[in-house]
Length: 110
Length: 112
Image (tube, rainbow over all chains, first blue to last red; front, side, top):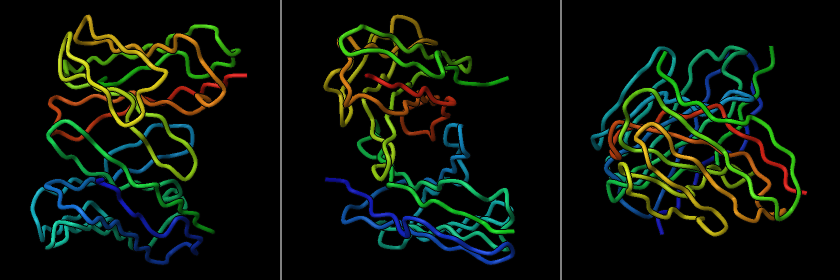
């Protein structure tokens, strides 16, 4: 099926370090999304990618839609304590369905 | 303020006692959906609705029902809850199905 493999599962980093996480799939998708979930809240959209090869930034966040349309990565530069949370990749397919990766849990040590 | 509102936020109940989790959005979105979040599994879609009176099963619909009588509301119904439905549930909405979704703050259900 349209399974997403998100890695790493968790990361423990020092404040100020850069972070990189990615999602891969054996299927092709037309849209890749990255969400962040703060503790006790619902996921919030960070970046949406609609075109293969597209590189999009949102402040310290940068995400790319892989050229093969089967993968995407999210980078966070100069991490700060409020970056803590769970990051999810997601794809839309069949115009109706959305599928999420299992999430990357980020911990930032001050 | 544009938002998706779920109620209750927390519920502890017993096996077999019917419960309903309400979801309401004030953005005039056509598309609404329900997810459950379990450790290591991410978010899995339970049901979705493309518009009023149109609902479809997601990946894990067993044991759940939904209805979409009005555009703004999309309640999730557990007719006979069981312990394996203990989870964190999220309602989400978007203008259309192809648009990124806005999520509520979640409902934590514990079925004893």
